Length: 136
Image 1 (cartoon, rainbow, N blue to C red):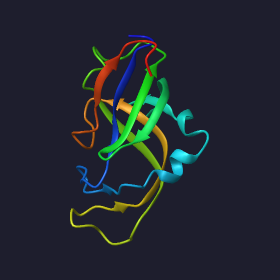
Image 2: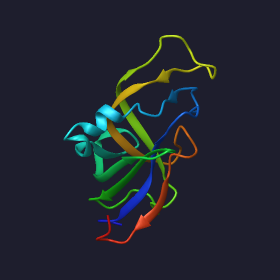
Image 3: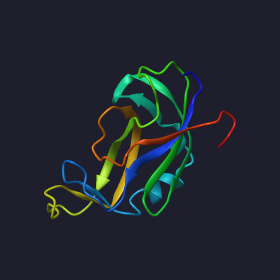
Image 4: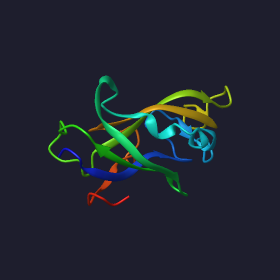
């Protein structure tokens, strides 16, 4: 599965995660304007020494952060399709009080990495499809 490209959602907006955290739409606007935002790695389960590949494309739509990644090593899972995606946030900012779901509301965030894993913190944060090589 070396060289496989895939499309998925790494973050959803305005919906509670398992821990009650909610990422507001617009929270990544500043991060995506940084010229090096695509240099964050694809990790295996948030393990810093297990880099699986790189990000080719990131964009925001009405649902969340849509990403396209490319694996540069053999994948440690049977299949990339329907794998979970999970962000590694840094510098999350928002109001100090807990939201209605018992978590934080994050209005501004930067990302350190995005990981492939079996159980994401939100059921919609998943790989949606493998992409033919050479497509964006």
